[in-house]
Length: 579
Image 1 (tube, rainbow, N blue to C red):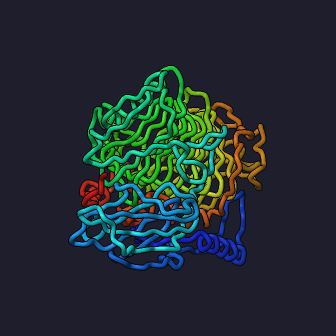
Image 2: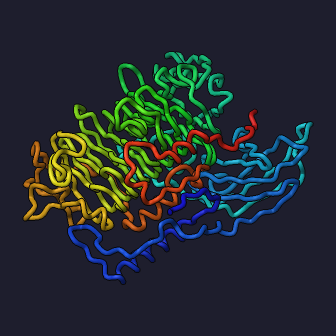
């Protein structure tokens, strides 16, 4: 049995790179044989990353409070300290690479968890940082004995993929991870989600009007007069509440542009720490460009569409580092886990990266088939004991690279309706039908189509690893299998697919010119390790569950133990230090 566990240890990039080089060296030494672009003989690997690696010499100096731990992650770090019985107010400061002088963090970033407090620092560039914690007395005076943590290493996010095309930067952060010029921040908790207020420009004279409730604030942006970037930070478990002021009437928080044109929203929606949870609700976009969604856990979303995250009519969207669990069931037999975990329609320039999908049913539908094809990237996502659609692509152009397909019950990637998919350096373990083209090859091996009777697309495949079970249901193109193939294998990532290679139903050919951005693909083994280390919420989130190997055969129905754990999840947050 493989254990998925929460930890508060930092994995420095040098160690990860070393592991990658070591694995590559071992594979070469072990006489890897490449057949049709599939790594055919990879050595055994551990079922989870190795033992926790301690952070690189973080220095802790206690003062009026005793610091327990400090650890960096991706453009953030945290510090925890023992609770003082006679103090309920603290000030926390940081400085380092992107902050030369001491900067005081916002009060809501300081939270109580039983017998300790935790503060998270956000919006910082990669580098080395230090923090100091000072208790504040009843008269508002800070202690003169600061507790300090120093030499905290912070890494940068991986900003690869189509979301950054056209010179756009999704969300309210700049490319270095610091807030864009003029960015404003609001904090959402379970207690204030319907009452939080913000002034928003709402006419051509830049006159401001104050709106209350998260959905009402976002709706005020629809007129298009407000152009200041907005960072929305969610704290702890926040429960479902349909209709404004918190969500729309479908149970989603809607980010929408103008009724006549899309808008560059420059909005980031992010969780604080490792336990921010959207419990019973999700997100939708419409005509909303330049949006970022990150570091949130989505549990039992209860939206009218049964989609946890639904992106529509939008561009330059980046969804990353989220944990996505079951949604509430729909009416069909294959919607018992919800419908789409992350569905994308009528969109262009989207990146979905470093997310952890937990036993999703219909993981990600890409396209309704009728729209102008868009360009989408999926990379370093952990599809963990999921069923199907990783993604299922209609018409669009998708780059699917460096993902970990782990115990997949129905199929991995599906190409339909003239889509072009480049499947590169993915790791397939215990996966049924890793790559499928509609109405040919493995898709119809059992007599009828696995997912539809739609026309096919074309999958270009390079350097994917498949274990024995995965490879058993995979049929690449060859001169003797030029019709019933699942993908066309290339010997180099830049190699073109010939126009003579066509989908059996519909005659689609591959678009060799759609991949237009620079990126660096890991080997499949390194991608698997990085995905297991970094995907999902920061520091692996606060939710732990163990999958058994036999769980790969459970499709459509939720796993009772996982469903029960989600239904009983409450979190351990006690209080938030509000202004």
